[in-house]
Amino acid sequence: MNESFKALADPTRRQIIRLLREKDRTAGEIADYFQMTKPSISHHLSALKHAGLVQDERKGQFIVYSLDTTVLEEVLGWFLELTGTGKSSEAKLPAAGDPVRKLQSDKEEL
Image (cartoon, rainbow, N blue to C red; front, top):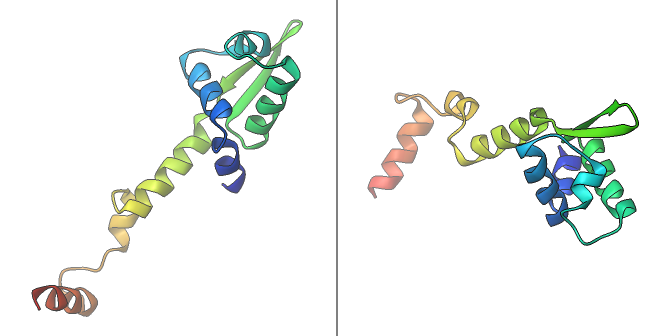
């Protein structure tokens, strides 16, 4: 997950993900949206691929990039768990009769 956070920290990479959310694109199509060299775009795509956020597939002489939502879903699940709104966080909460929960509610009443 560390590679995902590292890749998502860059605004250019986040914009590439937005573009790929709309539809699959070649590196050249992605480069048309930016004012940077194609090797720079290629570097960003490589980092996104290494992080598991995009996939590439050769179609003839082109390589088509697509969004891989598996890692994004994992990251989102982690955030939801962290905020207490995810499914797995609900299972970890103490039950109503649990002594830990009783102590917490007693402290809140003080």
